[in-house]
Image 1 (cartoon, helix red, strand yellow):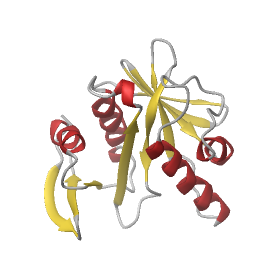
Image 2 (tube, rainbow, N blue to C red):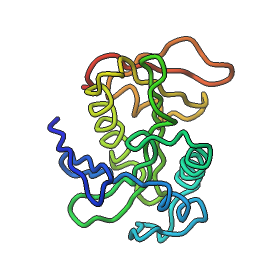
Image 3 (spheres, rainbow, N blue to C red):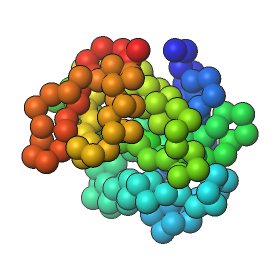
Image 4 (cartoon, rainbow, N blue to C red):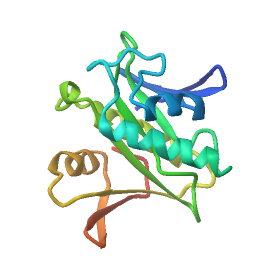
Length: 174
């Protein structure tokens, strides 16, 4: 996979073929956390619940003074027309070489590979950063769609974290 990295208005933009990940800073995240579109055109008119929750995490990190650009929320956009189909990103900056990812798609965008493409792009970028040696992810046991995303790009299941199934990726995704 070829990943193109750029910056637009100081925000990281990752493009891999049909998917573009556009970083949402604290200002945009505050709008998303309120369920507003934050200047984006959303496939289902507004961001989904998971994206709203992730945006709230970015806002909280900024309020606590621990937000680090590049390690928060990204809008998942179709490269062809810029329409946002979901959100993906990191649960925070790297900690002891590890970073955790998450993703959420609008209901009408599910089943078309957008989460796989977005997660793969995030992992390629993260593992190219010198402070990252492993990418983590977790799912609830019944979320077969999310587990399939992780398996498709090469994550290995590891010891569970409480009631969550845990996964790790230490090499470039497939």
